[in-house]
Structure formats: structure tokens, C-alpha cells
Amino acid sequence: MKPANRVTDAETGESGWGWLYRASGLAALMVGMLFLLGMIGLAITGLRPGAIYGWLATVQDNWLAVLLKLNAGIDGVQFDQLHGLNLLDIAIMALGATTFVGLYAALRQTSGIWPLIAAAMPVVGIAVLYATRIAGRSGGMAAGLVISCVMLRSNVFGKEIALEGIVASVLLLAGDVGTSASSHSTVVATTMGIGYVLFMVWFFLIGRRLFQLGQGVSEEEAR
Image (cartoon, rainbow, N blue to C red; front, side, top):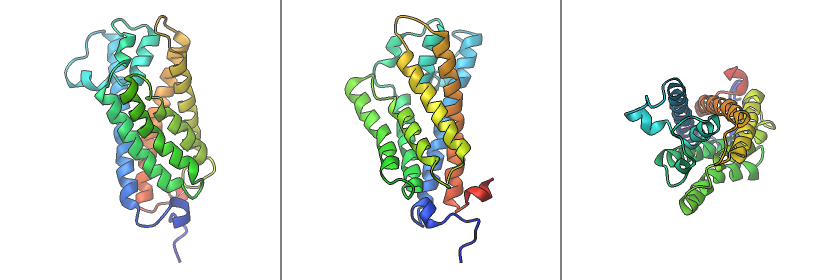
């Protein structure tokens, strides 16, 4: 008999998929780290505008950080920075897509279609971004919202992780929609700032949990 503190096949998809959980967990941790570097860049820019250079300058301007800085009215940040193919944004979306594939495997017994839709959203977002050079990035937040709602019905992930993902995704999507090229907004900047931090932490928590799933650790044992 399988020990009670182990995750059953019905809870996580199929046995033998530990490699996928570990790979997607690593991808989630990398997304969280890239968001953290963006946050460090935001903090430094806020204290000393123009102080960022070198390798940090290449990883600080993900699209969420740019949206946040636009609404905060930071000097030198232009709406045009959201146009074109930013390799950092594509990398984050690709890593996010890898993360959601692992989440699909873990949650497909809970809801087969919605985790699959969530896994497809970042991939579709990359295609849309390639075609339009501006739209499509929000696919990552939309995927986070969908998969977090599925988590509420599952015993694989804690309800706290699910709720954090929902709140983060809603705040970031609202901030994205509320951003204007012609004006700044403290309210939108605050909304995005809170959502940004929650989304970053969510990816770290997701990465940790996926690694645990790769070892067959249940939610009860993880606590």
C-alpha cells in the first residue's frame, strides 16, 4: 500500500513524470528569479535614476516592470519600450509555458480541459507577440488566473498558493488594461506593484511545490 504522505497517481497525473515536475519547477524558479531581478532594478532606478548598467540592465526591463515604471512616472521610460520583440519577455513566457505544462500534468485529473488551456496560453501569447510586436504578453497572467482557479478544487496545491495566484493575476491584468500611453496613474502603479510581488512569490512557491511533486511529496507532508 502507498504511504499516506505520498501523492497518488490520481492526484498528480501519472507516475513516472517526476522529470517533468522537476523541469517545470526549475522553469518556475527561473521566472521568479527574473522577476526578482526586475524588482531589484526597479528599486535601484527609483533611488538613483540611470544607475543601472551592465548585465542587470539587460534583465530588469521585463514588460511588467516597464508597465509599473510607466504608471509610476519614472523619467526615461517610454511606452515604445513595449513595442517589438524583447528577448527577455519571450524567455519569461517560454519558461512560464514550461511551468504550466508541469501544472497541467499535476492538475489534469482535477480538470482536464482548463489546465490544458492554461498551458497553451503562454505559447499562444508568444505567437501573438511575434505577429503583433506588442500584444500577447498578458497570456501569462491569464494562464496564472485559470490554473489558480483549478488549484482551488485540487488537493495537490495549497489553497493559499491558489488564492495568491488569483489575486496576483487579477491585479496585473487590471494594471495592464489600465495603463495609458499618455498619462501616469499612482493607483495603477500601486496595483501593479502589489500584483508583481505576489506573482513573483507565486512562481517561487509553484517551483518549490513542483519539485516536491517530483519526489512524490503530498501537500500534507509539504506543510
